[in-house]
Image (tube, rainbow, N blue to C red; front, top):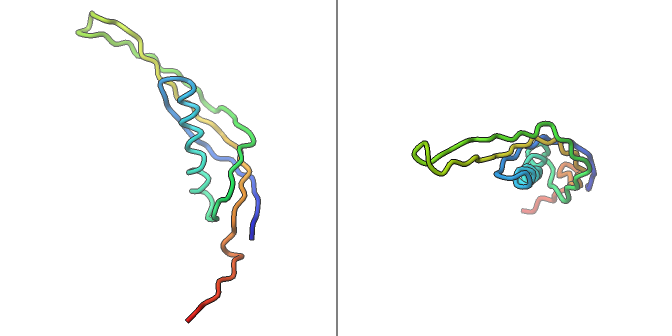
Length: 99
C-alpha cells in the first residue's frame, strides 16, 4: 500500500532577488510531483538540487527619460530537483461495496 520512489522534477522561479527566485522555484516542487504521480503523496523529501540556468536581467529606467535614473534587476532560475517520495498506491487498497 505505501511505497517509496525517487523522481526528478524540473521547476522554474523568478524574483527580484536571488533568494526569492530560488524560493519561488522550490515552492513549485510539490505541484510538479503531484502532476507527474497518480498516487496520494505523504512525504516529499528533496535529495539533490542541480542548477540548470541562473539568469540576471538588468533593466535601466528613468523618470521622464532623464531624472531619477536607476537599474532594476530581476533573477530567474531553472532547477532539477531530485526528490524521494512516499505515497499511497490507491490500486492496492481494497474498497468494500456497501448496499
